Amino acid sequence: YAGCAKPTESSHFYRIDQGTKAGGRDWSALAGSVLCHACYEQFKRRGKLARCDRTKPLCVSEKRCTYAGCAKPTESSHFYRIDQGTKAGGRDWSALAGSVLCHACYGHFKRRGTLERSDRRKSPSSSSPSSASPTEDDAIAGKRKRSGGAVQHVEQSSSGGGVGESI
Image (tube, rainbow, N blue to C red; front, side):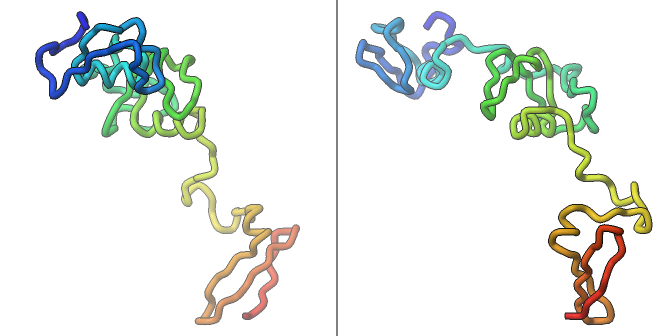
């Protein structure tokens, strides 16, 4: 392959013939070619030999999450360049093409398909115990607490008050 970065340095070389079917790809255009291990694996996985810019390391100035809602845009173990070919998690990444995401934002989008965070995890300091309203889970399952060594089951009523019953 003419675009190979190291055409003579490989652990293994593969002769491609008409019957090659690895990775479920159409290898017919490459019949008669000899590929190094890296190029063979690239075509087997992606169906193309050309590598994208994603393989180039990000320069220092690019190591910043471009998602405006990111809590720590410069603090990440890894940054990901998103391009038109990104398919992780089976998500549609096209709206994010050209972006750089930190590990947390990338993982969130990969799992959820959105960068928006839910407000399920509010910090404990954001509400005082007297103003806290029971959640639906508390109302359904009840809430257990310890008082003086005895376990007490507290049922939440619709008015928000609790009725204690020793167990």
